[in-house]
Amino acid sequence: MTERAIAFSGTGGQGIQLAAKTLAVAAMHEQRQVMVCGTYGGTMRGGYTESTIIVADQPVLSPPTVDAAWAALVMHHQGWPAVRRLLKPGALVLLDSSVFRGEHEGLGANVVEITATEFATDRGQPRTAAMICLGAFCALTSVVRLDSLLEAAKGVLPSYRAQHAAANVEALKFGFGLFPAARVPAWTPSLEAA
Image 1 (cartoon, rainbow, N blue to C red):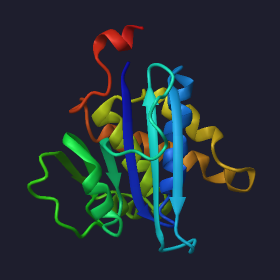
Image 2 (cartoon, one colour):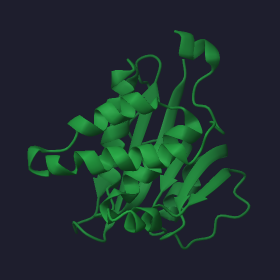
Image 3 (cartoon, rainbow, N blue to C red):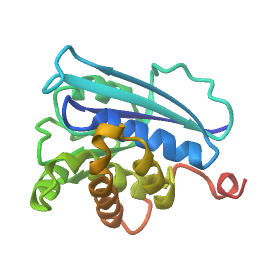
């Protein structure tokens, strides 16, 4: 059995919870087992927010709060110390270097930096930075396929925000296109064939 615990971290308003939900739904589209646990501070904008997503090829055994993470998507430095402590040796860490201001040298992790917030702003869709990060993360790990991710993005928004689905889909495609090959594949070929 293979389980992948992934920590998402940022601040309220960046789209961390939506990105986590999108990944979870995409994994379910691929018949994977999923557990998501999101937390956020008392403020809607600017407070610390995190989500842990566990994706597995069989029923999930890990609790929703984990002691170690296989990978992390970090959009702000505010929660970095907590995420850093969770990282397994060799973990993949995707950082939004447009916003992140923290020390990440000497981690023993595969750190990849992208300027997601800058990309999103330049594209005229500043609220899509988390989706750019998610697309890039999925390209780097192959945790889910792009088609599953795009399908999930169309259905996870509440009805009063449905008008943003097209922008999120484009942001996911953009982020996914930043990396032509997985650097830290989530699944072995034998698991993919199953």
